[in-house]
Length: 565
Image: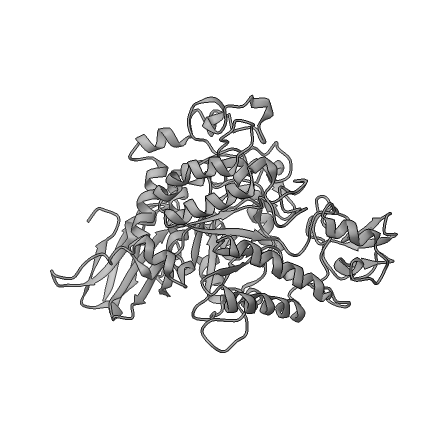
């Protein structure tokens, strides 16, 4: 059976269909899973849709110009109504905030700007009450140089347990085969500390010394931190920058075997005492290297992280649109290895960092820079510091297409706060702050984020004519049934009805027209109920015709899932 279809330019939704048996009694939609089921399911992360939030930028409840936990609690109903079921919080711990909170000075407390520990506990309880899981950050590669561990280490005797909490050297030539990640700001991975009289090692900023996991006391301290937050009810932990935990001479100091031994210890603690919790690996590596972060056990579970971000897929979605060719996507999916049955990829379009172009070739990076960041102010390190809507020049069709692919590809999708309404960015702000501006709630003062003096805000809101809060905000879009916000709500509602998206297999179709990306997602439940979803996307800017080979589904009828016929 060959089916000929015509697909509108830069569209996917016209080709999202459920294949069902040609009998009148067959139900088109699977039963909607309840929130209680999601909260109790130990594999909840497979059905998760993650919403990434920066506490400081979401909502300010006390009008001091900085978002806080009390404000986030006020907006939990908005997050739940969006259709997501998991909240990922960026670091909210005490910090000098020289790296926006990833420079932690105290692991077991809340930054005073964001509230109190009681506020954090109340937030977790209120999120769970609404059927929302909570993921927080476990930043264990490095700390702030203001952390008491580092202050004690720099004053301790060389070779002592306290000193060896960090990595020290008498020379800055050690580990010279290691790349510098933040090329725009750092010239070396070593920084001289006059107090210690030695160089300390750092893979990121020079104010973020790396912890020394060759010292067993470091892992013991990290496990104590992890237990603290899991005991408070945190459901998942994103492990920041984990490929860089261990250093060895003569290597590039990434993905070393000893790093995986550390992760196995962490996972063993999870399995023994917190079996319904999850570890999410941030490993910006090629798929075959990232696969190792799920572990090497022979069973279905893996013995390291439950989930890992699929970094190489993300830039290739953008490349496919730019080249009007499905090959970048199908090629990286072909290179993606099998993972343990109970593990899961996490996928995304944008987040709080730059759109990283580390996992592309030099030629591909230049192409993407020229296409999506012609203004060099939008470039940082090896990436692009722009939000989703500005990346595609506010083209609603391309925004919808990218989101549709995100929600239907294998893995757990992550949405970045504000992208659901098409928020813009400010490339004139330093570092990555341009994509971390306050959430735009209304046309009110400061976009409804805060009643504080605009000069006192943690970051200035977007105010330009196209993306400013006067024209792009939640209040307006909630009233408009055709808004991007309501489109996203409808898409998430459809996704929630189909287990195939979170737990199903992927089968790529290969129409001769390379401007058409087509695949099926298939899932069979333990009770024998099966789902087959056909997804067809046109990655070009013009209408396309294509023939799909669907003989394997003879006897079934495609039923449009998003309206139409």
